[in-house]
Image (cartoon, rainbow, N blue to C red; front, side, top):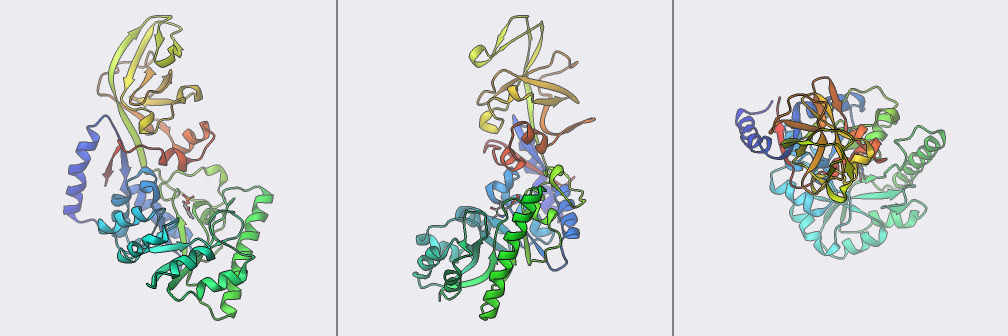
Length: 388
Ligand SMILES: *Cc1c(COP(=O)(O)O)cnc(C)c1O
């Protein structure tokens, strides 16, 4: 349950954002729904570790984490030391794991802010151990991603990490590289990653070394490998309800959390043959009407968007983006939409009447994933966190 004072605080800040030139609305009720839905799928003993890196994928990491705290989520993952410090300074409770590199020289900050650092490999462990101060860590194992983590073939190195005197190892994890694919060869690859991880865990236990809490899955790992029984699941994109449903095995009902909105700030009549925007990139085929929208590539709308056939929604109708997107504005064709006025809302992600634009749709047109589209959302976009 959310306290009245908190509700009021949310509402007052929301008004500033919603009146602005471009903003994101974050539906906290949908976020809560997604938490409940994901907990339903996870084994009873597996806790959600909410991945709130990159400003919670554009959703506002402090507000999202604060809300998650209130609905009982007590484990978080960030990418950087700065992201972790910000959460602690703003009062976020529970475990905060830094997934990426922290300069060993800065390890005092990890300790001071009661964060948990990922051990990237044995070399890194030795450096952390030199500071003679006990630091909480999770050990990462590379089972086939080829990114961070000590390689599982180096079992001696792995064992030595746990023997470092100043490392307080409270977890061990790995990351799957193709858990979002249902291709048979990818399924085999994921099986191999999981099996080799558990083999190392078995070896550690034989040597009476505790691996601490174990975790393997991120969002697609949870939805395609629901049978795994880990202590945590590191969930990002599923929490934000922006999955690509084509690649999911488990039936799950997740709601989109973020809408991205802007405004019509001016309207112009144009003549056939008139040239619009930078590079005279668009030439009107007939007389018509355009709307200038106050959102641009500095806000996260990719510059060449018009070539991908992308539109926004104005008064429930599709308004195609024309010409190149500018840094702070873009232009849409509103010839076929009746009665558009300045200050009308243009929706880039979200719903309007019977139309809906999902992050996954936008990502597909760009040949990328929802995670990239969301994390591109720029710093000028203020977020309104709504408890609707
Ligand atoms: C970003 C990240 C996640 C979250 O991935 P989603 O697909 O968004 O759930 C999980 N684990 C690691 C190591 C990550 O870097």
